[in-house]
Image (cartoon, rainbow over all chains, first blue to last red; front, side, top):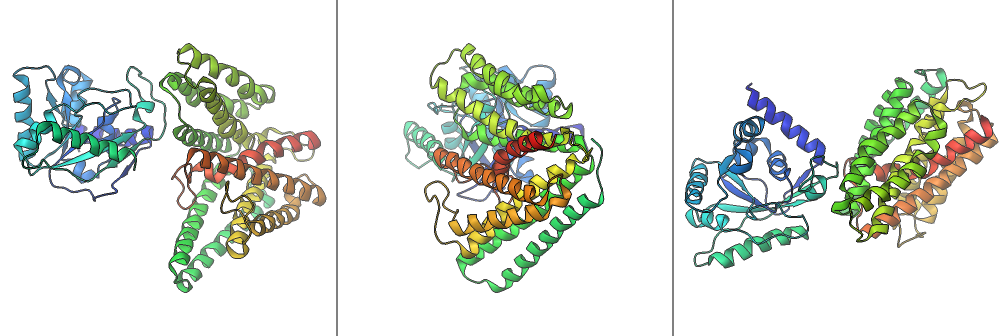
Length: 205
Length: 315
């Protein structure tokens, strides 16, 4: 067993212990086909929590999309992100980095991997869900057949809010919703509105 | 605080195991006989409850077997989890983050260290005085005044119920009772048996005979028949177990009645909190029962009263 596998197991157990997280799949059972999980974002724990609450077989093939300015730094952080979580680092700044980032996401999907995306682009305060940025739309346009699964994360901004480094061990909750797909004539704006509404809808479930 | 496996403690535990075996048997028999949908749901829940009771009994017996330290650690963990369940459902704000960190990682351990060190003077006032005053100060320093009084009160309430009250159960081991030296673990076992038996019997009488509800708005499952039958029977059993305690039979009856009434009050108050928060259970950790706080709600109210009655009259 490699060091990365061991670390992944330990990280999963630790995440579950600290956040007490329980996954709910009220609409559809987990599926092994490649999916894009998109979630609201309010804590550094979010990526880990979604990843740790997936069934083990799915987890092994699910890659978080991580901001390279934060995660792709030398040391433990990079090792954890790139080797243990197998994250795809993407450039958040505008410009030609975006096209390159999209290419890497599509490539991963084509290889049969699933993705974890936070389309708000940055962490919010946990109270409201911000407007979604267009990355999710571009992925959906490139691969219209891909199922996009809305994921609502609850209480994680209370466990580890933005700007804090010590967690408070409350009980978090992850709700995986019914997948959505890009409609044939759907505009970018309409699609992103619908995706955001799917997240808000899960909040009330 | 020594490990205690005298004859009486083994008899008490043997009785509990006998009851659990009875519960398992009843579950198996009902499983064959009951066919209606509503009845099935009750049987499935009953079997889950009995299974969980086996696990809880094993954990508790293991803690008692290690003497003082095991009981302190077990109840410390229960407090930690109960506080976690309570605060999760209670709206707090960003400004409470550091306060909550103190509550979980400083106040809970200190309270249980005080129990372990048998430092009664500080144990009795640490949360009602020091934590009580610290909580609003720390939140005020974070600079957010929105709902300040409500937020502060909720954190203080969580600490009082889930930590302070619960810690009185293992604190029974610190009592020095003449002629009952080093047998405090038996008192703890007695308290838990009587209070939990009262809950179980109220459930059994309620399911079989229950008709008239006591407080439909607060606790829809509590009926007059279930409550009186459960408290009456548990009080009788508490009196019949007098030989395991420093009490006379009549005193054991009076004390058992007191802790059963306190337990009933605890169940009602925590139900009122659940209705206020709009939830059915505090958690999902214990299959068939809900959360830890759902299981120990009666103990929260019974433990401090039992502790102080014993301390006043018997030490």
